[in-house]
Image 1 (cartoon, rainbow, N blue to C red):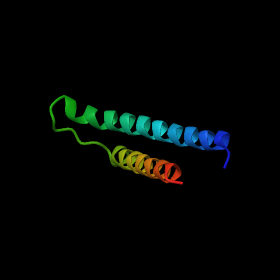
Image 2: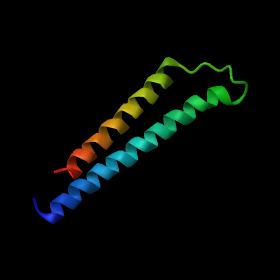
Image 3: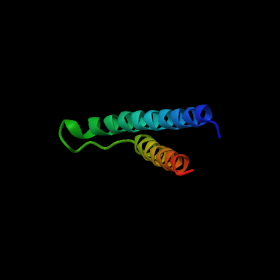
Image 4: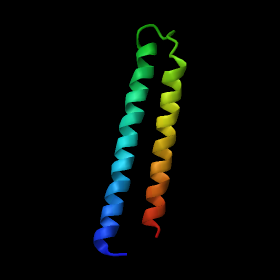
Amino acid sequence: MSTGKTRSDEARALERIVSAARDVQAASSALERHFASDGNGQPSTLEIVRFEAAMQELKEAREAFDVLLNK
């Protein structure tokens, strides 16, 4: 594999991690709004699922990056 292609693959993998981390942050912020005022808020199922999906994507992105680096 050429050095240029390796860097390109690494750059794409890092972009995936950054994007996933932003999604986690946005989903987390949405959940926090329910608990910020009185602590008794109830997030919607959709917000919880969104957070879970974002966390899963971040985990998978990090694992894919690790695999790429270990080649």
